[in-house]
Image 1 (cartoon, each protein chain N blue to C red):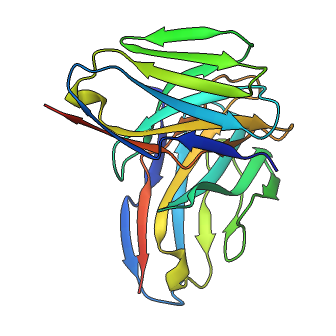
Image 2: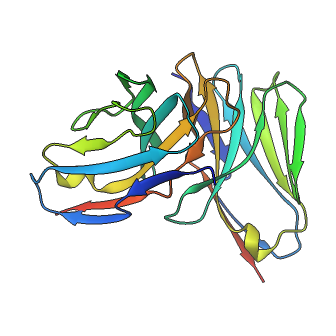
Amino acid sequence: EAQVTQNPRYLITVTGKKLTVTCSQNMNHEYMSWYRQDPGLGLRQIYYSMNVEVTDKGDVPEGYKVSRKEKRNFPLILESPSPNQTSLYFCASRTRQGREQYFGPGTRLTVT
Amino acid sequence: SQELEQSPQSLIVQEGKNLTINCTSSKTLYGLYWYKQKYGEGLIFLMMLQKGGEEKSHEKITAKLDEKKQQSSLHITASQPSHAGIYLCGADVGSNYKLTFGKGTLLTVNP
């Protein structure tokens, strides 16, 4: 089954404790991205990757890092999480010609 | 940057009624996506429109793209409680395959 998986689905952590949210897709897609969704602000892109070892900033990259060492994986790293990073995070992937952007199930992060 | 305005922001309808959600872009639309989201859950792809005048249907949901008006509309016929959720429109922006999203329309369907 074609899918994008994210782990963990729910995470509660404390300020400053480094964390990684994993994202994996099994569709051999070149393009992957991370979004955060906040009430009243909608979905905003954090980082994206056009292919292995190619990443770039989206609209709200501050406080986040990503890496793309393998085509299927695109982890999101929060080196020092802060409460304003409490949000619902989505990973997505698509082909360059793709008509559909597949989204993961979401990771709800709470930083206290 | 391109902005997408969705209207209405929220909508409450009685089961069986028809409804329309609009998505208006501040720039030319090259690809317009419609997604549905249950609160706090993932996004489910509904359909994508690329050409002006294009119209697509999925079960009781129809979407149209009006290039001249830079607008897309999503129409639900004979709404059911299963249609309830947040409807999001997204548009292709530039060449980096990024999607810009509207803020969503919250649909409630009362039995």
